Length: 364
Image 1: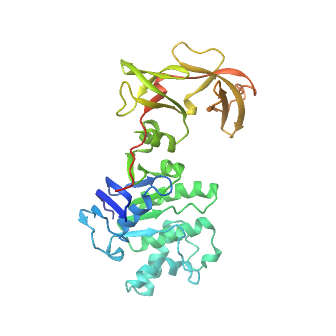
Image 2 (image 1 turned 90 degrees about the horizontal axis):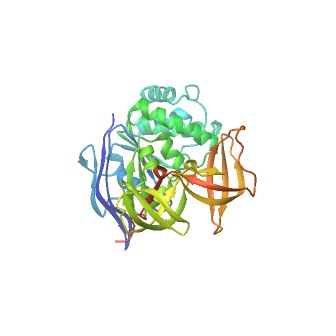
Image 3 (image 1 turned 90 degrees about the vertical axis):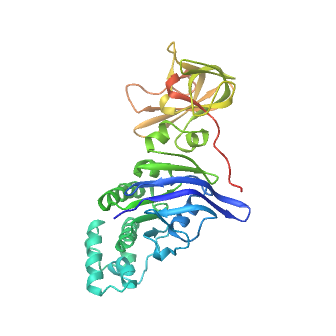
């Protein structure tokens, strides 16, 4: 019931502007794959290329090994869920779901049976005869998913479908979407600018910037081993130090900064003599009165404490006035330092990495 999707050196130009630049990736059959990136990075254009609303300027889009060039959207084995859902307010829920089957000539009994089956799949079994206006935001999302599944697509395309929901409902719908995808086995291709959505739901994530696919990997790979500075800073929080790679010994680099030298790992393509940036996650930093011998550290003063429930974000100011963040688990037995406390922000070499800037492009 699913197909793989292959983008082979795909480019899309709008006049002199290149919105998608040489994207090359294979999305496996039955995979939940997310394209993640800021507005204008090319991710929605990729979705339109896969769905058939436009053809690439160069390269090929293949679904199940078949080149899709020139094949109209209604003849592709895909279904698209838009951000605004585009449900029909005057139709009951079951007719919304079975609309695609009606277009294909299915009789009423067949359509109703299929709608009932899909309503059970999305846990709305008692909503067949309700109006769209009687549904909550999350229920409308599930109706849109059921309607897309009714035509038995091999590939489901989702363009930021959760963006209009409140935080709590978005978090709930992430789990719902993931569960539905696993139950159906359909290939899901999801577009989002929300890193939390991409990391929570996806088998793999492709991070986009300026039309270029910066990195593809599992959520853990993307977060723990970013390919460059853009990926590191877009996916999660970081404390960043600019400097230069002075030497490398036994896999550990000596990185010179205005704060002194730090011991760190080197990211892809970074070598001795390069000017680059060191990235360290707030959860990998700690605040200490005295610093362990092998740790990196800088003297800081606490400037703000933000309580987030299960964790605490402590903001600190260094001698240059730069603000850094340290994240710790909420432990009443180990409260954060008081405001104005003079401490050291420390981190281990294995938790820091020096990365080059993102691969840039966007104009052809």
